[in-house]
Amino acid sequence: MVGYGYVIGILVVGVVIILTSLFGYYGAVREGPRMLWMYVSFLLALLVVVLTFIILHPKDIFKNYAIQEVKDHWKLEETHPGSMDTIQTSYQCCGLDGAADYLNSKVWNHTAPNSCCKENICVNPLNLNREGCLRNVELSFEDENSIVRYMEWGLFGFNIVMLVLGAILAIHYTNSQRRFNY
Image (cartoon, rainbow, N blue to C red):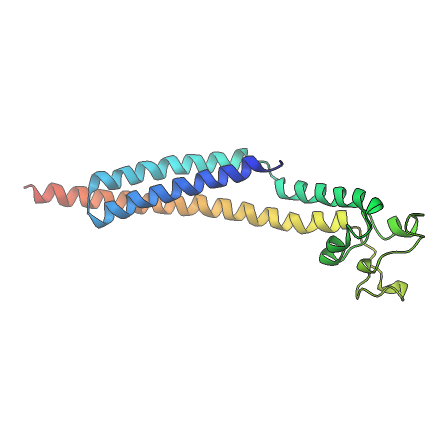
């Protein structure tokens, strides 16, 4: 359930971008100043929507979801061994907080599963990943959060550039239509 508002927001912005692009396309092809001014108006509205979306959306939505998934899989690990295997091999980690989670557990007979090892062979204890999955997942999603932020601000900047270019084109066609009428 986490993040549905974010996903719906992205879909709404995408639909608005497509509709706005159609106005710009038809305005430029038909050289219609009214259509281009509508395009500029929609771009201005889109600029406000994107800025509002950037300011209001939760910052760590993906990271929080991933952390909750790791915690859920760890709870499931006690009753269904192997639930953490995919996470442990993907993020090269072991247990929730570290390898000690398995090594101190009676459920696991004080041994770690093969997915905790660097080469999936736990014969040598030095091959054991010591880092916890919670920390590794959190670190990996911090990078993703900054990438999402850059993409949002990039979309905002691109929208400003398109707004300026659309206004210049609309002014040009308005002036050429006015000159034609003389």
